[in-house]
Image 1: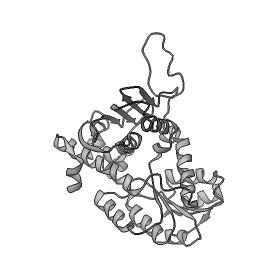
Image 2: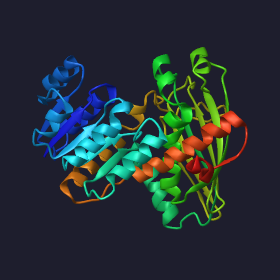
Image 3: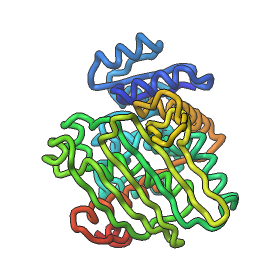
Image 4: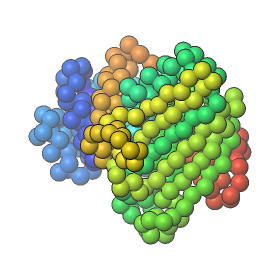
Length: 334
């Protein structure tokens, strides 16, 4: 099949490399506001260069991958759908929930599939955890712990435009908690602090946060995030039930150092970048998109799914700023 790529920054170039290696993909058509980025991708992956998103959509593509700046996501998603082209878009759907809801409304009545990029759904460990939970292996759940710790903060300009750590980072934890447990979040309480990079504080954000999520069946989820984890990129989940407990991410590249006498685990080189930790998941995610394009599966992460994770992020952001519990119903009404 023929796939278009809109945006060839860090993640767009990574997706181009992944797509070029998939058996189902025969050719790529790429576009980026920076012509040098498009030419570099064309030279490296044998892609065709188009001078605009409209030109990509008119180039006979079977599907399109949106990896452009967040502000461009709504218009590009809708343009692809209007052109009848299945679309994969990196999260978020839009910069604000108001814009995201407008995208969802605009998609009503269309049957062109849209897939939003939440890659943890395609990680083997998280998939196994979901299967164990939904298969009843753990019994009734009582506690979930989800962790995302970055090795270092992103650039100041990125932080200033990110919408905050809950919308930018924690939202991955929120999505995968919903996906693994099959439950919705009803209420949150969030805290945060700044003991690291000053530019994060100056942007009105926190560099380290914790959130307690109450799920709709009473399960408690604890989410921990930080922009500062010198040992590496740490993504884990624990799921505890009355019959069993399991963990995702307990492997030799886990960026933790045990101080137990005689302990040799973990013994590998720690993960230091999200593309390292989730390389296989990204490949599986884009493979799934080719199946969506081929019509052999439905979207594995819809706009509705992405907005649900977004509402949790909104609630946590409000909770942090107002130092109180916040229900999801409250932010939906707002």
